Amino acid sequence: MATTVITNISSLVTNDPSLGTGPLGTVQDAAVVIDGDRVAWVGASSKAPATDNRVDAGGRAVLPGFVDSHSHLVFAGDRTAEFNARMSGQSYSAGGIRTTVAATRAASDEALEANLLRHLREALRQGTTTLETKSGYGLTVEDEARALRIAAAHTDEVTYLGAHIVSPDYADDPAAYVDLVTGPMLDACVPHARWVDVFCEKGAFDGDQARTILAAGAARGLIPRVHANQLSYGPGVQLAVELDAASADHCTHLTDADVDALANGNTVATLLPGAEFSTRAPWPDARRLLDAGATVALSTDCNPGSSYTSSVPFCIALAVRDMGMTPDEAVWSATAGGAAALRRTDIGRITPGARADLSLLEAPSHVHLAYRPGVPLVSAVWRSGVREL
Ligand code: NIG
Ligand code: FE
Image 1 (cartoon, rainbow, N blue to C red):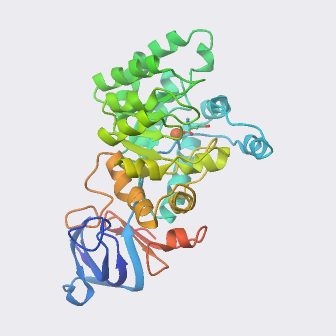
Image 2 (cartoon, rainbow, N blue to C red):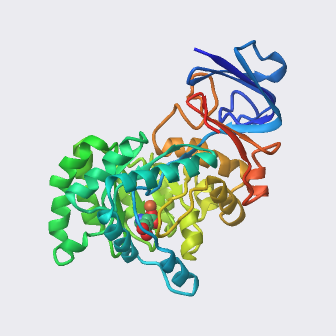
Image 3 (cartoon, protein in one colour):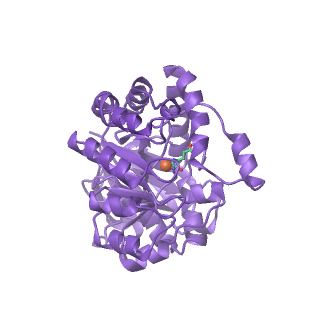
């Protein structure tokens, strides 16, 4: 297998404190050797071994590929009008999801797949090398299963979200919809998914329904993750911790007890500031979670309704400016934090043995991701050792 060395890296984020300085394990004047799809060596540029290929980073920064652990990219249609109305003062509600459900059901497999691929390429250009995505805009047995089948063809991290909202077809009988989600729909979806998720919120599913759905998924081998405490205080976060979910996502409205639960459990708090930006909602308080000792991930929530951004750098900039994170913390959360939220140790770090997923920035350090908001700084990306950009 061909080996490649990237030399002359001004600042390398490894996310392994034993390899460098601080929690990001930053190495100055560094080099990285890629062997096949793996990182083989990390060290001083002056000590880099000979390899088949050589890339000169020219005094620019390298960091792990972003791990975007929360998106909704199997969809069709457009909700520009809803965004426009919000920016004129209307509030966001879960009901807008129905617009995308109608458009998604009407779309062909080919159209859904092309749309997914377009967004995956868009994310890759911004440094994302792992992306989780969900069903949730089909809400019939066939439409949920096809969304997951299409997603699974293009990413390893696929989440069954039949419980996004109660299907409009069951508006008069939510209990029957929960039976469907935990019965025939689960049967059809299990083969294509790794995770099970529920939107636990007023207007979607309450705590008891969420518990039933997550437990049914877990009994079939899917690992829970929860849309929790996004639009209001509620039981989602505590339920996520109790069920040992990999992640509680959003965490916008948290009581002290919710923060304590996250700090003392195994569940990662995944913050999605694109949603607060696009719905003009209060920011989640990352500082409070970090100070309490919780593990925090940062992701895009890319979806056509509440957060139509595929840009992790944009989310890093928001988290630093408005959520009390330092640039180092935000970069960790968007790489190693995302990996923790997906229970992965092979990604989100640049260490020997890890998957060779890394980005070269048009900047001397990762801090520029927040310092230069909105600037396309990612100039090269390797994924599984293959140069994609
Ligand atoms: O994570 N919260 C629920 N689901 C999405 C929104 C989906 C939509 O509005 O289409 C979210 O924000
Ligand atoms: Fe979401």
